[in-house]
Length: 349
Ligand code: PHE
Image (cartoon, rainbow, N blue to C red):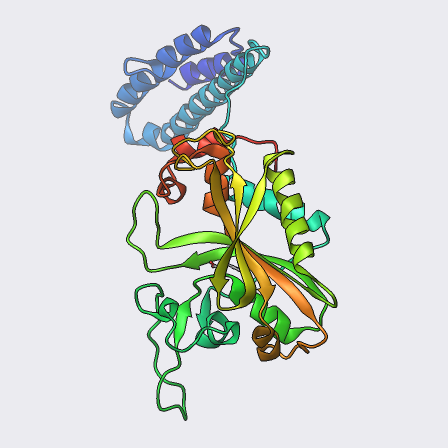
């Protein structure tokens, strides 16, 4: 038996298969269920205890040799196969991977920011959870103003601070005018800034209203700022955003924090003034509120109202987006349906 093993050992050591089939034949010959090794172990059972002592070790070593030879060669052939696969045809098209796209509201917000940046406006941001002072009082809202009502504002319940009898009003901001107050309080004029951000109002969700939406507000405070500056700035903005020739008109309006106040309409971007659903057949659509900052607001924020004047404006990004892309249901903006979102492929990164 020892002789047999020696002979097979030489054979195994010399074994150099040309392909995987030869290796498989080797496996069957030595390691298969009816193979040589199995057979040797059978023979081993019938040897004398003395022979067993020496042969046991030899036989085990022989088995390990056959197994490791087979394993090494198998790995060799497998990697050869996968290399071969990689070589097959590199000119085949690769597997595509999905590139995301910007949300339409982000696209339009960035576009608005770009236009105002070119006019020298900076971007300012502030908290979405606000106190009554920054969202209402500093902005000249009388104490009983309906906008403070529970119907419009989401109040945040919280315990009174130490030393307070009653918790002060904390709410989700209803407009980004609160950022204007923060800016005026903490700096010195001149100010020229826009405030993009999310705002919240307690409205029933439908195709035309949502409990949150996005705004860009703007503020310009300096000496001798006039309504003419306001008109020209917003006129320029509209030409940049919707194209030359878009008409604007200002209608008198009311906001507690501006005096005089106006709403600005543009000629309908969809029907170009001919009349359509979007403009309710008037040819005009309202896009923003604006006005000269009320001197009370300046005083509330520690700014000398005799020396400085300024204008402010605020627009909803959803509305501006609708006029560009004709999106008829506001809910689409927050449902995150990729079929909706992937329509807004863009080069802007
Ligand atoms: N804050 C107003 C709103 O949310 C918009 C506005 C801003 C109007 C500035 C006038 C001046 O509707």
